[in-house]
Image 1 (cartoon, each protein chain N blue to C red):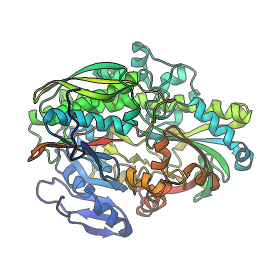
Image 2 (cartoon, one colour; image 1 turned 180 degrees about the horizontal axis):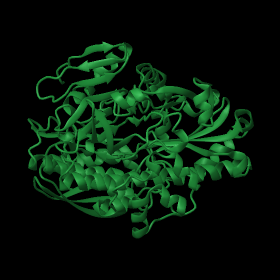
Image 3 (cartoon, each protein chain N blue to C red; image 1 turned 90 degrees about the vertical axis):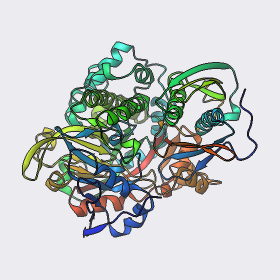
Amino acid sequence: MAAKVKLRQVDEYRWEIPREGKMRTRGLIYASREMLPKIEEDQSLAQVANVATLPGIEGASLAMPDIHWGYGFPIGGVAAFNLDEGIVSPGGVGYDINCGVRLLRTNLERQAVAPKIDELVNALFTNIPSGLGSRRKDFKLTAPTLKQVLRLGTAWAVKQGFGRPEDLDHIEARGQIEGADPDEVSPFALDRGKDQLGTLGSGNHFVEVGYVAELFDEALARAMGLFKGQITAIVHTGSRGLGHQVCDDYIKVMLKAAAKYGIELPDRQLCCAPIRSPEGERYLAAMAAAANFAFANRQLITHWVRESFERALKLGPRDLGLELVYDVAHNIAKIETHTVDGKTKKLCVHRKGATRAYPAGHPEVPEAYRQTGQPVLIPGDMGRYSFVLVGTEQALRETFGSTCHGAGREMSRQAALKAARGRDIVREMADKGIVVRGAGRGTVAEEISEAYKDVQNVVDVAHGAGISKKVARLAPLGVIKG
Amino acid sequence: MTSKRVSRPRPYRALAHTADLGWRIRGASLADIFVNAARALTATLTDRRRLRRREVREVAVEAPDREALLVAWLNRLLYLYDVDGFLGRDFEIVHLTPETLTARAAGEIFDPARHLAKTGVKAATYHHLEISPRPDGWRATVILDL
């Protein structure tokens, strides 16, 4: 459909879309030569160029190696805007505000857990509502309580006894984005959130029990408390219906705002408002509230992950460990301080399907990782592996401290269903030593391994380009899918 | 129901798309487009034919134009599903202008024991959204974020 976008190779891992037409800056894509044909198949490169036309953009319009077609902004897109002329866009964050990943480590080795993996997966499946429209019957929030959640994020959950105070020291922004204002969240969004806190949802969201299969950097792994053969758990979910509604509500606001402020849009879904406009400020306040809901959501699920381990393995918290390694957001816009062309500036950094990757020594990296750099968690598909990386100085210089977030789909959901037809996917996974339980009949088939790109290729580009550094590879043993 | 079953072409058809799901909607009238898009949404979430018409919900939405109205309508149906578990099987357009829609949805509360859980939908999006008159009626495209 769209004209082919010009691409110029910069080096082995970097490709440039030269500035032309209405672009205010260049596009910069991190990819290997082998990835390009697939990237060029969809319209994601045109989307990188479209983002480059938006007012106040600083540096390049960036795309991480897991770039693929999104709404307006590409998935894997990173774009930073200055606070004077720049814009904020709900499309640059996505519908699932603060969709993210957290990793827990245990004191257990693979051999101790493998024989009990069925019980463990069943316990997780029973304790964590998942799937289409999952809700908690036991846990409905009143309106004032929900507003507390939106203001306080993880801190609210910990105060209620869901988790440990030290969890807060191992979460991006301590699980609470500043400036959240629940009054900017519509009653519709609040309604959607009131019985969805502590639920996984459907699609690509999951809880996975796995083990450390390979270490790339032993010193960094040790500093994160990771060792080979160690049992781990990953939680991947976001802000559920509340976040989707906030996005939809503010897209409507921004469609009007873009016209009001005379912002020319190459694509409606890029609708936005100046950061320093009432519309922009309201969106940031509502987005922060939805992000806090997501942080609290992952915290509650973590609590039930811990309970499930205790019940299934009949071990106490001290024996289990189950400490939080880190929690990252991969759909978010944040006000951050960066250096551009030698000048220190406050910017609104949009990461849509991209992860923050701050280096050692950065003041926003928690104390525990000040020496190593911030842990970056990259989940893969349910049949292969996930990766732990750390942020680097180079990321801070080049990508506003950002890197990739996952594998990205290779096949459409329909193609995946077709490929899975007549096959018993749960049995196939069991034969590979992975226990899978899915709430929806379709979900497990849609999420088959071959429907996803190999996340290793994505991680290798991020590592090769120096925007993060590989620490460990995790392999799955048991998964619950939404 | 006021909407007549369109015999040809199919009222809704899935478009191939890697990340998410697009629907190509057809209808004899603009009202049919809204009815068939709602059916497509329900068909994404569950097996529509297994839903019973146990209750009727009235929905009223507004938007700046008819395309945005289609998105607002589908997202309101998703809201009903998220909040109450309600899924419409059949839809009736009561009143439709380019900026306002009043409609009724007849269906029931989703019951995981009886209903098939297919794919979750986060939202109907504005991306590649279009509604256009065709020689044989109307055609629309809407992409769902899954």
